[in-house]
Length: 242
Length: 242
Image 1: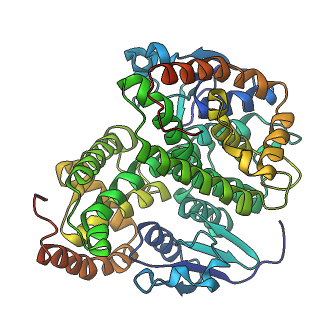
Image 2: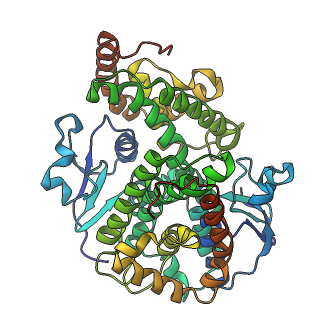
């Protein structure tokens, strides 16, 4: 699987949480890449052309010359090892213990932060709008509680009393977590608000990724506000207290 | 987070799929470790003592001297980088492209192989026995289909026409996948049977991990047979055709 290098291409939609993490990471670290925007709302991820890059039809995806790669955590690991200078390596440190702590969060992320926060978002807004039906309150409540437990666990275990997961420096794990947790903010729901230490930590992650974090995140606000309005107008959100 | 090394301890239950992957990996590669068996059936994972190792109360977990680590994929990455000789490094190669392909699968695993196969197992056997109620056929059917799609995707994307995910050599990604897919075998359900190439691949993973794969896996058969019998006897499996 070795081969000639080439131009780096990232396929993404800034409405997607893991897409944002990868794009913010690449921009903050000044890794040059060609932008390939795949508009989920136009179903461009279902195009045959994109299926050649990612047969699972999801964003983000990466091509580096003839090398294709999926999964946001994996793409950030690869970009860090290939493109970061030694001064930038704190994002994914070479030290085996620090690196393992980043990997530990990235593994944990999928069935905790990703699943619970994204399913809350899907059940609260996406499914009602796509299927034109009221919010399934039982499911919503399940994922609301699960997301809240996840955030408490991030606070107590991954962050504890540190500035970032690894200590004084931000890493791709912080970024991956923040982009997922922030998704509902666009719709006016602040998942972290019950956990003041998480609010402060998210602010630090945002500052450590400035101005790219804000630039990549601003798109979720206009769409999120619209989604909330449409769900409310159709009275699909009766019973929702968030 | 640096510090003095020390004796390696692995906390596991061989009934747990990710525990088996870690234990098989360590034994095949002759990494010396102290065994700390945590019997899930005796609820030992809920003990306060174990919560000091893993506050999430799940197996596997690792302690290497003063360094604690969770998540099976992360533990295997750490053990590979710390303990494998250059001849053993094919399990988690140093080459950035090969390594990224292992990471890609390990990331993908959680919300696909792990979620769908483990939920099929939970809904078909664990939940009926613990909650003493019939199988929820709607949920079972959902996860049966999802597991089948996952297996087709492993075949077409991760394995394709290769011997193992990376080509001619086994990796921790193959092992992680196989241990999860094999879980239902103990209960008499062969998830891979519809995919003959996967059956052959699983045989190769087993051979590449011999005799430790068989030794670690044999425990699922006695318990699995018993679970199937109990579910059948209580008539909780009416409507199940698997």
